[in-house]
Amino acid sequence: MKGLINDNFGGGFSSQVDYAFTIIGGESRNPREVKKIILDYIEKYKEEGLNKDEFERVKKKKIGNFLKYFDSVNFIANNFLSYNFKDINLLDYLDELKSIKFEEVDARLKSHLKEEYCVISIVEPTTK
Image 1 (tube, rainbow, N blue to C red):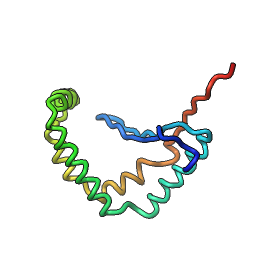
Image 2: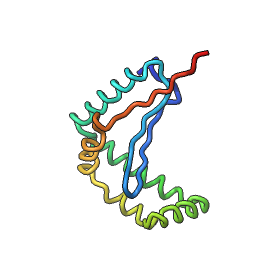
Image 3: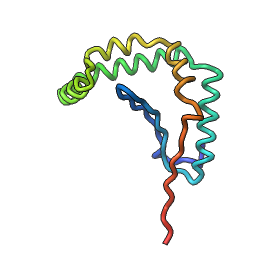
Image 4: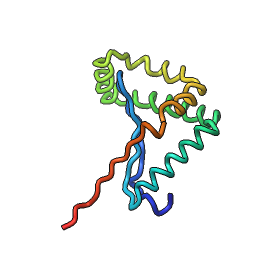
């Protein structure tokens, strides 16, 4: 997407007890073309499937990052309370990460990232 996006482009995933969403955003002079390229890329992944070795590497990284967070008293306090209000035990998170199976993630990719669920929001500069 050289020339279509800048360094501020990124994405993320957020989930709550009763909903979740993926967000991809940034600046572009041609946002509709960027959307098309992203959707084509997602379709390619859905057709070819995920790479199992890459999945295992990312899973280990997520587990390592989660464990590293426990070096921070601030992380423990904020997240323990936040998860507790959602009736989730923060300490169960590690077991959940470890239990994630490749086949589940591959299936989730196919069910979650669908074009019919996709929206685009474009903020245009005002003209004077």
